[in-house]
Length: 386
Image (cartoon, rainbow, N blue to C red):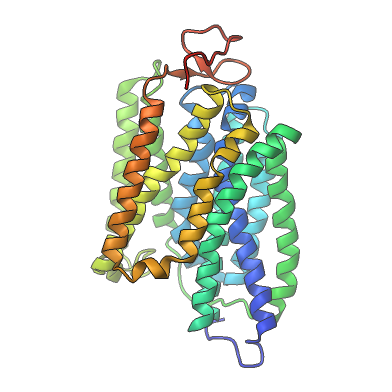
């Protein structure tokens, strides 16, 4: 897999088979990341999550995914992209099963973390497979298709999360993520039989990966727990400081070793680093909006999970349209398009903040959906909300 496909293998049929597999996997990973936002209020009530603890239903997945993604790409290069892709699907299915069977908050968070690891392995291997297999126009088509799957996955995730929760219960959303990876794993056996594994000699920076995951987890845990009234502030500051030290150690290690997860040349690429900063800022704004927005719709406006998930379909539809036509916007200049995009996001977030600001804080009772702090657990109200 280190070279492009031979002329015999690089046929339209092989392209379609491989891209169907990779695009479907990408769709599944985005659905897994977005579906949880709709079902958090239901899970939090049934499993009795604390107010801040419920954020870890999403954070456990995202933290492990982000920390493991760099290491997964390097591991895929060394052990083989096809093998790591398949291993990721297997780990994802295991994590989904653990989540579906969870009876306590701790077990659910563990399952979500395993899901994040499996998603990181599959996502990194998928991108590596595309870059190693295709060149020129086929590569552009493949990357464009993967980008389109992002918008489609967001739409499907928000809608399916609400629909499955309303009709079959929230556990069904995780069982779907057991069945589909199992089918994709079987499909991959046939698709990858035409290719080599793509393995090559080298070393993976396992310690660097652990530093990154540990630093992110402790930093996020400390910051989130500041919202718990019973938390010891000194302990939380220690967690935050330790997380920052681990992340600093990761950066130092990347500059000191030959087999770094982030090669030194990456830090000197000003354009790449600038793009990553902008992308990080965008995700920092967008991801919490889905989480908080669904809590607001279900807990304050009394939307059902299905109605809450459907409310985000217009946003996801616009993402699909703009992602598939990004080349047209870039004709006006990358910076101009970026500025316009951030300006529109700022306007939309400002508008949403006016809707969220006036209402009372929420708490999660022992059963059912979150309610107002000044209400009894069995009372829910929506008077005065327009």
